[in-house]
Length: 488
Image (cartoon, rainbow, N blue to C red; front, side):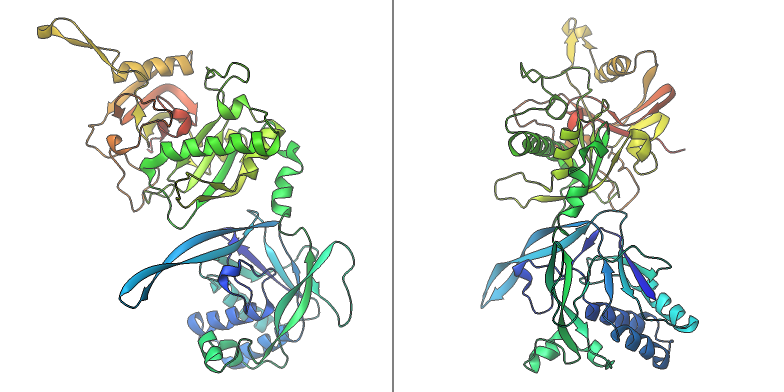
């Protein structure tokens, strides 16, 4: 028995079924054995040419001699849309290209299994070295880590025998498989060469019916929504953001508000008719007035890799989520600002308590000292008192944040230890390609027209360690006023 494990590190598999146009939006699932063999040959030729052909060819022949079975992990489908430029005579135009993909549940792997293939130690080692060098499977966005697996889960996708029909809740998909004996040159042919020869399908490949579970593209969502008790009481739900162009970090407030609107939409009109959730909306269910005490949900978009663009969304509700609220959140698949703008894709990652994420994101750290990664925006405008020749500030920036700290953490002492100049850029969460943005460069207007006062870059210190997240000031429920521990 031989089993290969593929882990998609970005939790996405991008590949269009052979012979289909990319804009048909049909992702290949399971990955075709023909594609797997082509990937092995490409990685061998480019990264391990020192392995002689005489050792690799028998491995490829063994893999081509049997149709593998697959264990497909829980998954759903998604797509992004790209308007690619092209020249039409002297004019430059754009054409729509749809990039469909399979979104794989984080932490789950795909297994390809050859029940009757048995390689000797040398050939297993060669194959394992090649697989560990494989950067992607399918299109270049499908980052993958491959290796030979010692064990594997039960297969749930397999080739049909001649003349048989599947039993159970299964469906048939056409899958491209290699013929045996395999020609090494056929695995290296480019699609342009095939088209030049008037062909679509490679000569040494054939189509074969495979079966997969009928709900294989809903099992990822079902796993998270059909049993919502798994999320009951969770305080944190984390998403990765994806899109053709990710938004800039200074648009944190805009996308935080869009996330709140999406959560309310999924909870209300889509799932529970006209029901409303005070936790998700931040408003009293009967009166519609804003809630006090900051126990409702925080929608925190963040740049977590330091490139200046938002790449994650954290929804945090310290009192915990109900099963219905959790279901609404994990059902969200995109954030749409409207106005013809391209939506931002959401990829659910995990949920749990604050302490579960202490090593995942710095916003969940525990520390005495904290610094801004988005500006603290004054919830009230400062005032000046006294005669013209002796005016003094009332309710200034330092007073406002220290008063808010006293209210949010009663019994603790917290003070501002540093107020950076307004021209000083706010350092990103992690060191990366971005040097950060100045406080006044961040968008600071709510959709309903409300706005805060000035924007500041602070460092604060408590008399004992405090568990994050820490978000303070105007629009703190939408990502402004977010702090991370000071390193060192």
